[in-house]
Length: 318
Image (cartoon, rainbow, N blue to C red; front, side):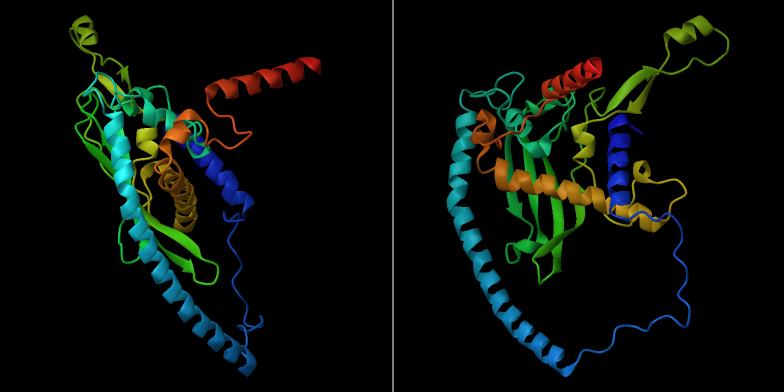
């Protein structure tokens, strides 16, 4: 697996271990003399729960009204997002960029958000330069809690044929009493890479086979593709419990552990998608300029290097 995927799995495994989600050994079977299940609710508790249910019914009515209001105002805001898109496209198509008015607009806006810190490799950035717009919409306008869609629009480019790349987050309410929303599945567009332009793989010569005409054969050695870290691989992929990709399989671990690992990755991905939907898309120019960047946040490889230098200085002092 690629280096980025391996480090991602390492971070996920450590986090799961810290939360006690990775089993170290099989739990013992319950014995017959163990305590029985929780006793039935007392009459007072039952009555209190009935009150809760009536309260929740009114809460549902309120939430339905809020959803309708959100959609109404989203429609009023949409023309401003379209005006922004048209302004960025001013001047017509330009080589190497999807936003001629401000070259690399979307790439810079994304890089300035903490949710996208260190998500881009150097080979990702020329591709992201061709972004013309990023859009958002709900999967079901009658119930916004069912999830949302992100749409990445690209100018014609030398890397892939897709004009748009979509990513859908299917969600549902996990707990009506604390408002928790759980991501159930993530589905992404398949990228149609042009020949020799797939940046998610590195190419290296295959080892030559022994045989006649060895020198001629070596000159014609085919290139072998090896996966490498890339935003386009890690962001535009499908994730769902029970559908574990080969790269996420954990040796000698149960399906439950693999599902927990997948859910951990889905939760992080969902947070990133939500940040893009709620922060970057509405106020992209403020992220482009850096005005929206939280105070004290510093991102990018330069800062990583400076931190390493500080660590080296501390070692020298020791």
